[in-house]
Every structure is written in C-alpha cells, then in structure tokens.
Image 1 (cartoon, rainbow, N blue to C red):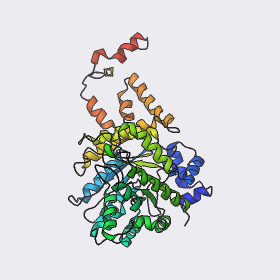
Image 2 (tube, rainbow, N blue to C red):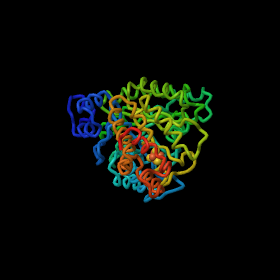
Image 3 (tube, helix red, strand yellow):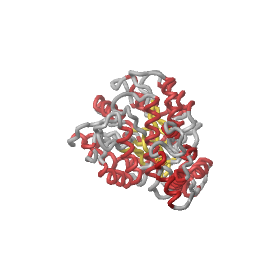
Image 4 (tube, rainbow, N blue to C red):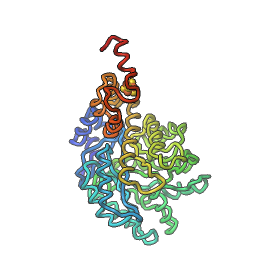
Length: 422
Ligand code: SF4
C-alpha cells in the first residue's frame, strides 16, 4: 500500500489534499508539499469514513475534544452524545479515551456517530487486563484493533523509555508523571524490567501504521503536570527523542504529530513551542492546553485557552480542549460544550496572528465589527462563535434596537449623528 505521505512525495495531489486545500483556502500543491515534508498531517486511516482535516502549516488551528468512559462511570450513550456535542460546537477531531466498560463497543459507537477524525490511546485497552498481565503483543494488538475499526490517529508514548525515565528520576519535579499512558508505560517497564515495547519495537509500530494509514501522535508521557515542572530536563529529553522518532516515521511514509504540555506559565510558552518545533523539524504540534496557572480548578478551560492562544501564536497547530471539569471529574455534556467553544476561541485568537491563516480569520472579525456598527443583531449572532449564548443574553434587552447595556446612550447610535451617517 502507498500512504498519503508517499503519494505526496511522488507529487500526487490526492482527493484528501484537494479537500483540505479547499476547506483552508490554501493552494493544493502547497498542502501536498508540506504533507510530504511532514509539516502537515491529514489523519485518515484506510477504514475511516471521516472527512479529511489538515493539521499543521498553513492550516487553521485545529481543536480536539477528549471524551470517553472511566472505570467509575460507564454510559456509552452519554459518550456518544458528548461526541456529537463536540462536533456540533466545532471540534475538528475527537479522541476516545475510554477506560471503562466494553471498549470495542464504545469506540465503534463513537466512530459511527461523528464525521470528523477519531483518535485513541490503544494502551488503555491493552492495560485493561492489568499491568502485570499486559504483554507487548497486547499493546500492538490494541493498535491493530483500533486501526481496523477506523481510528484515524493513535497516541503512542514511545518517548517514555529508560533514557527519559533516568532524566525524570534525576529531576526535582513535584508531579512526576501525569500522563495516564506515560504512567501505565513506566509501571509496565518497572514490572517487567524491560524497555517500552513501543520504543524498542518502533519499526514494527511503523509497519502497522503504514499498513492502515494510521497517523501516530507521539504522546508526551513526560509532560509537566504543574507550572513548576514546565521546562525541565525530563520534558526536553523526551522531545529530543520524539524528534528522532518523527524522523524515522517520515522515512517510512508514516504521518506523525507530536504532543506537548500540559502546564506552562505564559512567559515560558514561546520557548516551549519554538524548541519543540525545532527539535521535531516542524512536526504538527498538538498541545494539551497549556494551562497557565494551577489554581483555577473549575475554570481550567479558561486557563488552558489563555495558554492555547499564546501557544498558537508561537506556532502550535492543534489544541486539545480542556473542560471546566479538568482535574475534578469526568466531564459531562455541558462541560464538553463549554470546553469546545472556549478552545475554539483560543484557536481563532491564534489564527488572527498566523501566517497563511490570519487574512481569512481577520476577515471574520472585520465582518463582526461592521455588523456591530450597523447594529445588525442577526448578523452578529451568525458570526458569533457561540450564537446560541449570544442570542440568549441579547434577549434580555427588551424593546430596544440597541441593547440594554447603554440603551438610549448607545455610543454607536450617537456617533452616527456625530459623523453624519444616519
Ligand atoms: S447600547 Fe452600548 S453596548 Fe449596546 S450596542 Fe450600543 S454601544 Fe454597544
């Protein structure tokens, strides 16, 4: 089989590339060129029915919504509704992070429910029988099962290995490892006195990814879990290794994303993003936030959006949605809605500053400014990221053509007269 990356290398502008180019207002041959270089990915596996979505250079900043059961809370219908909700409110991709119940069933139901690419973390399924019983075959088999079901991209924590673990042990971190996949991998390595199979047998993983056209999202198992740990040696050690793994994947025609932190104070985000981009030779960068402070549980969708906007401005390509439930509980449908919308705001704020994207993004803001000047409420609602909420709040302003904020003292209205533009 020839992968999309190999076709792009050969100069072919495939249907997926054409579709992404149209959606992004980009030149199709530029998309092909950057896909061949690995600076753009289009996660779409051979068994997938998802619409092609481009992530990376020249692309609008994308957002992912995490959903999935936990071992305490298994309600497949609720997860399907969350997936539909995330897509409705603008998620570009979904990740099924389920760890409880019938994982095969919930994955299939979620894939069937949405039209956007779906990702997963196969080690969660492999570890279902317990870390002590899990074998390296279980880990690779889980990847194959997910690929057969039509998963488009998989998080693989191949950068969690003896070398990055050594760095971690020598560090002064407060929160050692907060990545669930990272912690599972280290527990397995400790129990078996062996190297991480996804690292030791990375070539086999690439064969599997090539066979199913799976995009590998190289997980940041050593990601910082608090701002104190944001820019330490363990994180950068992992990134050096992820850069090498990206290079090996590209050489075999397999598309890769790289995942990043986590929790980073605002003044370290630029350094974090640019060094990750540099070490991975401009692989599309997928950030989990980053949250810019640790003291706002209940509002972590906002702390993450602040970080996501700054990170996007510095070159992050893909933002993982954070919900108000982060650090507190499994998110419900309202949390997913709120988190998706807030992350879209962060992505759009970043797009206003990005080469190749800002012109389109700024045109929407300009339209909104003109609609405000015209006091054209319907147009404002149409352009709003969350039109439902905007409409609901404006409905409190009864019997005025302006709004109840200033009513008759509406400065827009007054200035029409001042400027002679009735
Ligand atoms: S009333 Fe005030 S807030 Fe409302 S549209 Fe006019 S200037 Fe803006």
